[in-house]
Image (cartoon, rainbow, N blue to C red):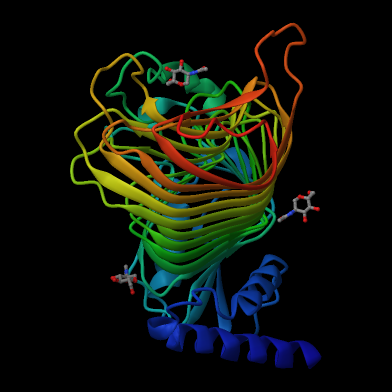
Length: 431
Ligand SMILES: *[C@@H]1O[C@H](CO)[C@@H](O)[C@H](O)[C@H]1NC(C)=O
Ligand SMILES: *[C@@H]1O[C@H](CO)[C@@H](O)[C@H](O)[C@H]1NC(C)=O
Ligand SMILES: *[C@@H]1O[C@H](CO)[C@@H](O)[C@H](O)[C@H]1NC(C)=O
């Protein structure tokens, strides 16, 4: 009885969230706690009697780890999505094998579609199942879900990427084909992804585009340090994305935010191995939308190649990156703890980046640096960085003991103000 009452309250709170979605404005994550609690309930099957279950096993999926259950997953999703009541797709414990699938709306459920994922879902290892070119086929695509999605459980999505990483040629080709992301969210609003694990994606673990108001909480993303371009969460053209309580170990950026990302909050994330938290690369496409209002706080980077990074190419493509806060971060043997790099990709080119970077805050950054130049602010001669604030940066050198260079900062074309502790010492005024 008590449980039914709780479920009802949660449903009412969720309804409140949905009804108020149009006017949240300054507080995009209202009722966030209720949503997180609801996602936890979903993972253990507490969803209330008003929610009809659609179990993949009832649609012919085989939990034997070797029969291809793609069509069965798609049929289950379709049945849940077309149901005119509250619906939950269930992926129970067991091993499933699926190829590329698209879970596409619009759905007809009055409230967010629920997916409870507690099984081990493996991708077909063979890349030939994933054709379609640059923005073609990813593994599991969620698209056009405007009423939202609650994806929760302790299940694992295993991309079996070890079989395909050898096909990644991005290290020596600038126009390389992206390998399939394990999960892609496109045109998805008002969604929470909670609890699940992603292992060895072929490409990105998670990709988000043209979406709003998405929460990733308590995720475990795992791939080896040498796996190519396996970004943890890669975001473009999206706003109000919150990433919290996540562990991300991967071969590329833990979180990468490219053109058109605004209002992103990253909190309590442990990143490493990987390439750190990255804004950019920017200046990559024509007509790039700006990036703004990004906050990365209360997080730890372990053995990563970068910590807090903004990177732009030296191209003609103009855009702005502004209002970015990196705060309360711990660096544990990070190669480049603080880095703005406007020479990314082609240091030798005489062209200058046309991305303007302003209003960037590094505050309470502590820990250890593998490099002697722990703070690198290398900005464009054409568009110097303005409003860079360094407040309380306390790093210690732990790299090779015989490096004779001083522990230092490099500011090139950057207007920087300092307050509090500064280790390494600040750049010379006017440098
Ligand atoms: C998501 O929300 C935004 C802003 O409210 C809206 O413009 C967009 O059309 C919505 N997307 C979908 C798929 O409904
Ligand atoms: C600077 O850092 C020290 C040590 O981490 C802390 O005690 C102090 O409150 C910080 N000062 C500011 C202005 O944040
Ligand atoms: C600082 O960075 C610039 C740009 O990459 C480089 O040309 C310069 O040599 C660096 N200075 C030091 C002291 O490392």
